[in-house]
Length: 113
Length: 116
Image 1 (cartoon, one colour):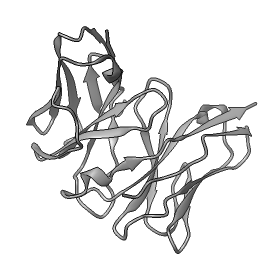
Image 2: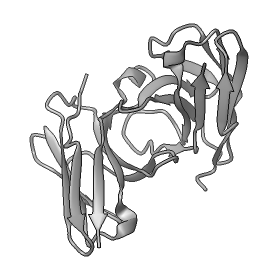
Image 3: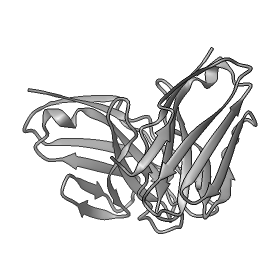
Image 4: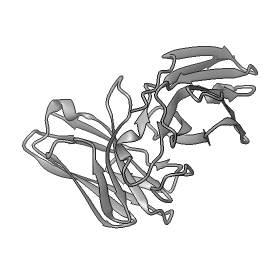
């Protein structure tokens, strides 16, 4: 199973770019990499998903190297409202792979003024 | 609002009680999930339903019993729970549960369960 490892916590300041890296050395060929954001007392919220190279949407970018053993979530110009826990998820979904949907421990990101 | 609602939001129960958690999705999705989130632990996938059929039970004790009467509703029936079962129980849904990514999950707000 593709276990993920993330830093427990990170601090940054408003307006800065924040990069959170997730390691997934045992990622399988069919696994996608997905990142979620979770605020206190709320369910996680999808941020971005990718398989390889780079993916960008309106809120973040996801960088995945060729070996896919890690991935980096990049948040441009963070604000105080980006303070949350960020989860890296590796899994493929599918009828035979529910047990492969594994959330990491999450990175607690704190943004300061 | 994510389109996924859960009730109740908070529940306190004794070890001999029987209670049920309810989840409803208004997104027209075909797959629904139950997760457990304990303090200082990663999210743990408990059950997956796809097209109302249970896809997998992730070694969850039998005191947790899921039910999916239709594609919009998911229940988690609880009985003879233990204090260590106290946690945030999250429901999620996705369009499908198929390989190939794109299975963005939409989470409900969760039910905070305390077992005394």
